Length: 158
Image (tube, rainbow, N blue to C red; front, side, top):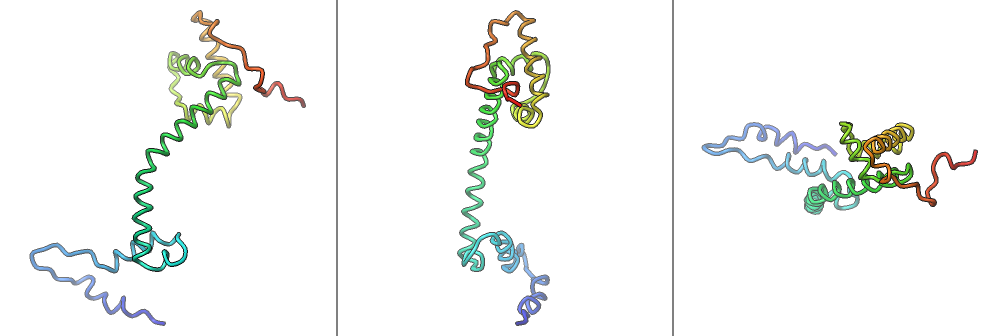
């Protein structure tokens, strides 16, 4: 099967003459844009323009709406992971963050969470630094012992 309709209409696509108004985008290019976005769907939504265009509109609407929700969810996850990592090392999350900001160490929750997961020794050195900072400032009573239900790396048997 030879697709000649594109070549037959190609001469009119680029030479559309309009008098006194802006030319509309050609229908072919608009449809091809939607078909490029419909490749990931299956069945009739992938091949039929009217069904696929509705699906693409809905997906774009959901993605716009979900951007804020994703940011909120990720921040909650970073806070939860950072709190667990701080409890594992025997320091409260708020005290840890406040001592880092007082020492002019500009690390946000995401970076600290990544450090606690992928670089545990670096995170441990940051927690010991925060503990020493609190002791120097006279707030050593604010440090609480580790909880008995939390296993640290030193508790593992080899």
